[in-house]
Amino acid sequence: MPQVPLWESEEMYKRSFRALIDNSNIRQSALLHLNQDAAAEALKKVIDTVDPSEPLKILGIGSGPGDKDLLILPTIGEYFTSKKGKKPALQNVIVEPSSCLLDEFKAKVSSLPPLLQQITESISFEWHQKTFREFHEETAEKNRFQLIHFYHSIYYLDVEYALRSCFEEHLTTDSGVILCLVQAEDSYIALVSHKFKGKLSCGSEDMSFRTDQELVAIAEKHGWKYSVPLKEQFEINVTSCLAEEPTERGDLLIDFLTQQQNFRATAEPDLYHSVIEFIDSLTFTKENGDKFVQGRSAVVIIYK
Image (tube, rainbow, N blue to C red):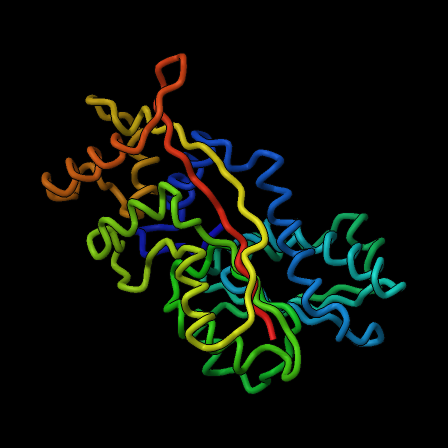
């Protein structure tokens, strides 16, 4: 789950995000496997340089309630063991500005799943209720992580600042990998974000649904090694968004898709109609008459 943008409350954001989940197949098995496969692909880039007698240090940026972190840790543990012949010690540093989401994450790790305990030598968590910029500017320990991950959280950051800071100052000196899960360039969410850039910013100039091509361009600019090894499609049912009569379900969904709370009620009429028309232009219709748009997630790996 991404970091919470500037909504009136975290509860409103959660309800809007739940509307996305309920109206899409975004949590189908293929997309869940994408998260795990992404972690394995990232670890491949550093596994040869990892000392199995030392802890594997992982930095999670904008981890929210920890669902993605806890999903990928077993994959990391199993892959490490298969390549190094011993269970890893995992040290996780979590940076998340939301106290509510951080508390949810802490509650989940208070009793770790037996599988995770079985495939690791030890596992620990260090918590930082901060923005990434605050963490970067305040932390004295640099060049310490072998793996840094942004699971859709980079949308709420100055992307070049975040990537450069991580690559130059937070990855270990001679090795390390940054894992980003973002929108693919042709994803519906990216298309809307780009078309209405600056108008659907939810109060944050930095907020944008970043794409694989944007991250690749930054990597090429700085001469960093990178790969885009994986992509996966999903569908979002936007029928309720396009209905003439407003519904709570439709309003919550369009709030998430535009990243603007109460969008139908608060947007300028011209902007609202432009967004609705653009959404409709991207839809395809299924046999039951429901209208869908196509989403696509991409994995971008930047490494030393």
